[in-house]
Amino acid sequence: MPKKPKKVRLFSALEASKLCGVSNQTCVNWIKKGFLEAFTTPGGHYRIHPESILRFMEGRGMSVPAELTEAVRLSDSKNSLLIVDDDKELNNVICKYLKRYLGKFRILQAFDGFEAGRKIFEERPSVIILDIRLPWVDGHELCKKIKADTAPGSPIIIAVSGMDDEKAAIINEGADAFFLKPLNLREILHYIKNIGEISCE
Image (cartoon, helix red, strand yellow):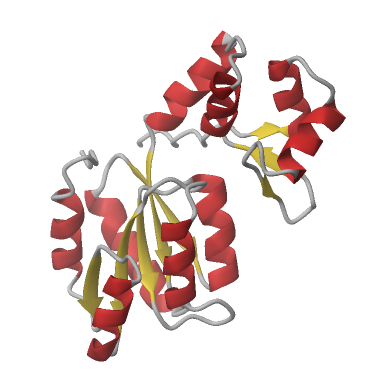
């Protein structure tokens, strides 16, 4: 049985403050002012990606501890893919299929726009399969937000829809590819495997 992939290390505001050699409140103030990128958990706590702390420290000439360098290295070595579709049956079918063929990917799932937004910022997926018609926050809005915001990195967005006339708009909003439902999963797999900078094996 393959090993369970480790989750990317996230730092609390307190942990980040210790890395930077400042008080917890100073770190929280940096986050509130937008100097240090962070996201908020459902419980109201800050979580910070190691890359964000590294950029912040390097930008201010701070000495970077080995613990942070190692956390960034491990984070960079992970590939993950997020499936966003409110059709749970289809979402599960896509998940099961891709898990068979994408050995190094962590396959994640979200079933509405809000859950997707949280997982994008927590997990920083390399690839997002994004249904356009979603409850709460639709795929158009989510796609534009992902492409406009540097915090989650630059994931490849594969938009999917049952309506062919959605294609032009979503591509214009930043999606990298569009597939029409009912989906040909082999075509999607082929597309992912041919993204040059992403290792699938």
